[in-house]
Length: 459
Image 1 (tube, rainbow, N blue to C red):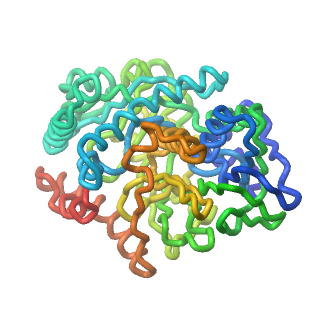
Image 2: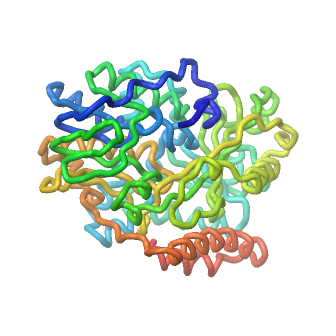
Image 3: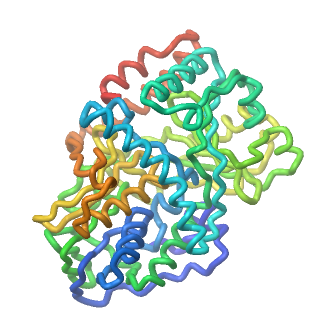
């Protein structure tokens, strides 16, 4: 158990509440629905189930506390990003269903906003959209292609539009900006406030959350803990990056680490130069992902990939911190925003996210086995978990709806390769993305490495 949960992230450290764990399970239990994991997926599922049918007996089982995992440590983007491209989704379904999947993702941002307002969850929700900067000619060409591709699927400038240099700089005053893209379909949030507020809303609806209750195994219609067996008509696996620790699920998802840093609150003079006036989330067109936001208390919260995958899908507290990655994040902040080069870094943290072998998030229900699941969000789970919760609530209640007809429902990703192939392939992929960025800086041309790796993933 973590001695001080405030050390988990900036978000936990700035909670305006005492972090007191709820009581653990004390014996065997029979319920209608048992949910394993009190992150966004588990909590949204419990929320929509309880709202739809208050008579259901629902229990949520959590090894630590609500929001402990990625839900309390992420970059705070409630976005419409889905890890599989529209083209990839269409190849496995139809054009119409792939577009419906993306439109459902777009609508999810407003649905989260609706619920936090209705439930009085003060999570600093601000729908400013996302700016992705193009800072080299090759990145600008990529931005044009991405917008053109989205428009080819029937979306328009109200969903994604190309920015010229002046428009992009007015939103995000970074260095070397040549243009970019903008979508309104994203809000920034305080992740731990959302997770903890959602847990409180679930409590009010009569759902029981047992914290400090690790689930060691999931069986057909049962969740096994050291404190007792929970039998249920449906058990929901909502464990994302921690899934490989469950017996029988070791190769379903790979835990890949994403790390973040946050500055001290920055003065108004900095924001007058940099912008982010509507708290837009921001990134750029490099291959190795970076992401940032202006927090409600005027910090830069900034993160990126690059930490290694650990052999055997191990998840350990010491992996949450990597000094080399933190130093690189600080370097990139100074590169983008020279006025922040000397800003004090007050927090640094990280954690695992879940990656399916085909980079295709999914949710579903095996009624015969009494097992449901959702996950594989590849770091874009804040919004996707809400869509998963609504969809699982419909599936569990045997409701046939627009949500249950979406193509990610019942999608089955292939399992990851056994070790050492999983370790080799995952870390090679991370190196390819870093190498692709270096290649583009050196040649000024689109990376052949990234193109080849994209084809390998089926993007």
